Structure formats: C-alpha cells, structure tokens
Image (cartoon, rainbow, N blue to C red; front, side):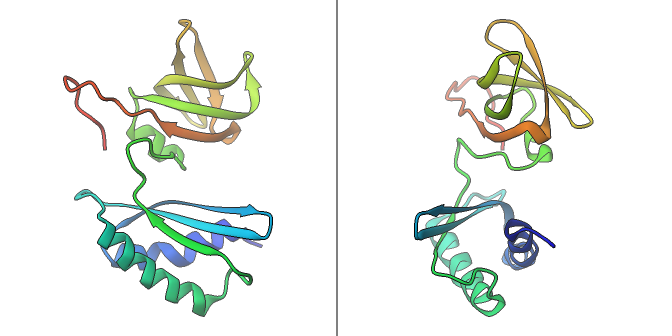
Length: 160
C-alpha cells in the first residue's frame, strides 16, 4: 500500500503539470492536532503569489474529491525558494558543484549534519566535499533532509 506522500504525489503531479508547473515536492507535517500539507511548485519562469493561489485552488478541489487526507489540515502552496529542499536524487544532481546542507538519518564518518559541495553521484552514492577537506560518501536513502545553500556571489551563475 502506498504511503500518504506517494499517494499525494500520484494525485497532484498531473494536476500541477497541467497548470504548467513542476511538482518540486511536498511535506506533510503533524503538530499535535494540527496538520499542514505544503506543496512546492516550480517553473522555469519562476513562481508568483498568483501562481501559488491558482494552484492551491485547483489542488484543493482535487484533494477534497479524492479525500486522501481524512482529517483537518492546512494547505500551503509555495515556491521552493533559493534555499530549496532537495527531495530527490535527480534534484540533487541538478545542483552538482553547489553547496548543500545535509542532515543524515545515521552518521557517516562522525557527520550527522554538514554543508558540503556535491561532487558526483555513482548509483545511490553521493559524494560531498566537506569543509575539512574530506570527501563523504553518502547513500541517498540515508539523507533525512537536504537543502540548497543559496549562493549570493554575483560573479558565479546561480543554478536553477
């Protein structure tokens, strides 16, 4: 049986793509009795507040019909932003050569949280150059959360 995140991705991806956006990812969080579904959308042309509002209305209607979430929750639609969460291996590979903030499920070489430059990927293993000159080899499945570190150096091209 598919997880709620897998089911939400399956339902929302075609709707969001039909509106001209990419489903970047989603987070479903519970805070006691309060739940929030945050859906991140992206586009080569950027994402405006009006875009988020339009997508929110469309997917809100779909979620009401599909009834995937059977209790009260808040729906948020957002751009991934400059410090975007990287949900998939493929998204991480788009930012090879960039600095990424990583939190691991299980430590690797005493690192549980680190910032490193994504150097390469071989299968499920991602290689990061970290501050002390070491290279960490991390299984993608061991990554709890990864986020792009914004680059404000105007001399370098910003990915995305």
